[in-house]
Length: 265
Image (tube, rainbow, N blue to C red):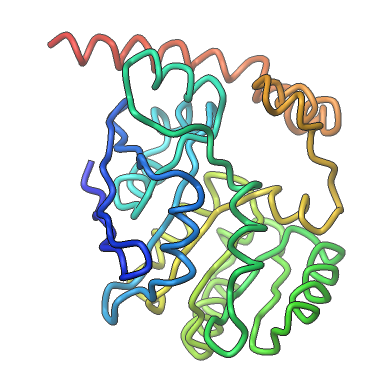
């Protein structure tokens, strides 16, 4: 896939290596190195969007079905391994990935290292409650030039909202865009509008923003380490997630088969 290799600044001078599986080139940087690059290296003038994507099981399934989502992945600046099944398969294939790097883990690390007066983040939140809490948190961190926006229902199909959001991003010269909306909506929207966006980093961290706000509870650490965080998610949001994890997710097996078959050619 045609993913651009990020050039590191003096603070993180080593260029990253990549490893491929499912036709996706995964970064071999650890989380600390990724965060260092994001908070110390401004996106070069004229480069536009640097989209970071975090591949979990649901992403792999959707990439085989959704051409727009695949297009966003193809142009991503950096891809990490998020889901436990993806990480296990990548390791079994011999990929030198450092471990699972999730959006929920990256968001606090990035947002708390951004510098007021230098960085201008925009957060697109899933609810007014999350938006209000995150606004308070950013003000406590010293920010005054940040933007907090609540996404309307079906925001990705709302052309008026889309134009207004693009205008906010450009007029405020936003440096870091965080979408707290689930995949593939976030990634597709940013990729679709990349030509109109300022030079910035973009992230689709989904529930990661709600976790940070305390609106939703993240799985206990022992479940995360065991790769069973999905059980907690289903238990807390059964109507929204049960089908994804217990029915749709079986298509991951087909993705594995296709990947193995392609490698034998």
